[in-house]
Amino acid sequence: MNNFINIFEMSPRDGLQNEKTFITTQNKIKFINDLSMCGFQKIETSSFVSPKWVPQLADAHEVFTKINKVKDVKYTALTPNERGFDNAVNAKVDEVAIFAAATETFSEKNINCNIETSLKRFIPIAKKALKEKIPVRGYISCVSHCPYEGQVNPQKVAKIAKHLIEMGCYEVSLGDTTGKGSTDVTSGVLEECLKVLTSDKLAGHFHDTYQNALNNIQLCLEKGIKTFDASVGGLGGCPYSPGAKGNVATEKVNKLLISLGYRTNLNSKKIDECSEMALKLKMGKNYD
Ligand code: HMG
Ligand code: MG
Image 1 (cartoon, protein in one colour):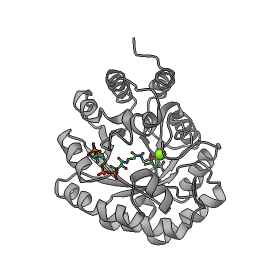
Image 2 (tube, rainbow, N blue to C red; image 1 turned 90 degrees about the vertical axis):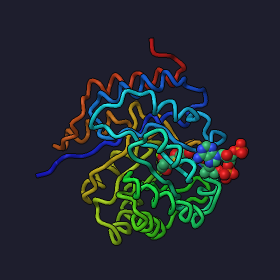
Image 3 (tube, protein in one colour; image 1 turned 90 degrees about the horizontal axis):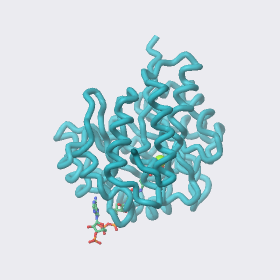
């Protein structure tokens, strides 16, 4: 039985992007170097977005070019437009991600355009990436609940997910941005998505604001989904989702998966050390 589950580490990107105080580039680099020792296959390292929108990640180029890259770890980044993609290629990013939303208001607040425009904007990124043999991942925010519009139509989520896969994304990560998705709501989202895509094309991205994440992950496992996004120490949140907390903590997901008999190939001790460091960085402390 192939019981391997992939935990995609998000903390340097989704974790740090929401921190108000600037975490120095040197601290970020040391943090990512430590995360590289945990056994993750992929680390979302930064974003090539507008520094006016996310000042915390304005140092993406320096971070990418100064980290000690470990063989077998892929260092990934968000790219909202062609400019971001070109900058990512220039910084030798291993994989990029394009990110859409399931509601118009969130899309406008997060990337300053409606859903249709965002999908059109992603086409040349996906084309360029495929030409350069750079894998592209897709995200959809607010799959269960929107901080501005409330309830979300799961059929709309499925339609966007299919669109992103058709564009060339190898996988779509379903984002419960607010963390308000109960298992009932998530179940409806998965049902619609699995009508149009197979489970190997989907990943779970749960923010743990209301402690729904672990139950949702178990539900996804039952549906055959094998990739979950998480952040050490539960770091993070989206700056354009007021009040939303971080991704589900990597250490919690790892423990759950092991207890259920899955393999993650991660070093729990090193993850715990990174989790402690993440919380120190959050409190404004530095590496010694
Ligand atoms: P815009 O204001 O419409 O774009 O923003 P623009 O083209 O008018 O550019 C505005 C300024 O940004 C200009 O600078 C551009 O040059 C610059 P100015 O001329 O005013 O000095 N600019 C850039 N600079 C560097 N790199 C770039 C870039 N593009 C423009 N790539 C834009 C549109 C998409 C750029 C903006 O809205 C943006 O950067 N948004 C990113 C927001 C973001 O990163 N949000 C968090 C990540 S998503 C998330 O957390 C959800 C997720 O975790 C899943 C979940 O939990 O739901 C993935
Ligand atoms: Mg997120």
